[in-house]
Length: 172
Image 1 (cartoon, rainbow, N blue to C red):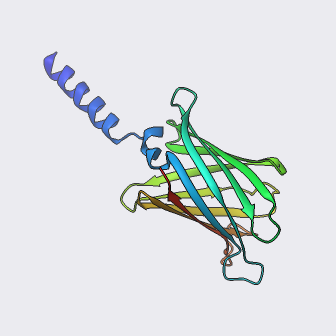
Image 2 (cartoon, helix red, strand yellow):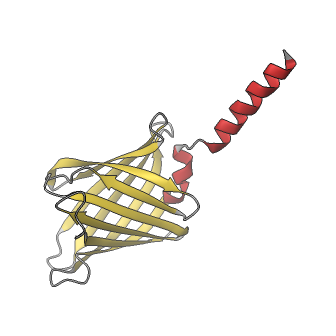
């Protein structure tokens, strides 16, 4: 009986030490300065500059990140947000993205790579359903996060095009 209890305890402790939680994304929490370059390296390139605030939400089950940026070409504001939670059964972070100036919302899956200190994101289709989307978020420097995103017309397309580079610097 004691041997069974010991083995069960070991399995539970081992499993819980490897499972993830929303707290694993604690590096997102805080206030950030955002410099987002859209279509970097192309003739369409422009920047949006602003702020992002991320906090635990709904009794700590979610993280909510709200951003307000200004398009440097025309001084128009853009407000957008991410609502993030951890789905234990699928072992993935589920993300819903919202924007004040667009009626549809995005659905993303983020996979945490602790060894490389980054999140790998995928979205089956973007919000206008004409592209596949993937991204990385590097958190190697906890005070400077680098988000990069790419899109492609076809999932197996070799022509992934970088659509944004978002550098956030912690302000508090």
